[in-house]
Length: 192
Image 1 (tube, rainbow, N blue to C red):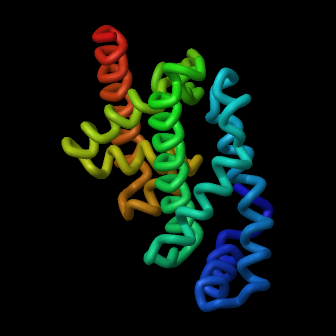
Image 2 (image 1 turned 90 degrees about the vertical axis):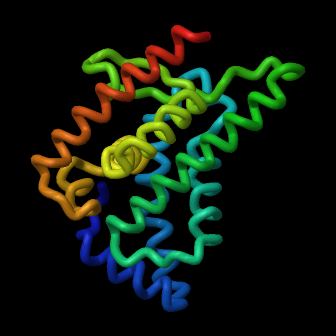
């Protein structure tokens, strides 16, 4: 995900959480660009004009600052960042839905390849959120794996490490969860 070894980021996180301002600034510089790049890849073209990647990352960092949870290492930080970016996108999508009637704004959508094989598709953030909430009620680990992979940009190996399971288990979980989400999202679009 970046040029710094994971151990260096973990040390920066720990120093930052203990009040080291220099470590916090270094951490911000190292992770900001990568999180912004990840956000830019996920935002669909029609959303990019209104929902800027920089704004998404900045709001996610603000959410992280307000948490009482301190990340223990790089993967834990990325998991928290993935959750924060998901929450920011959902909040923005809900606000656009409220404002949409008079403003003519399009819904916030994300781009993915994972949910539909090799085909690039745009997903409405609110539809995805609804499906993820349902998946969380059925299988928390699979939903967490999707969140870490999709919103956090973690590799299968990193997701497995973050969730303390084997890589083979995560590969199966992601395959199953993606198929389930594709079906749930297809059913949702059929209802509209």
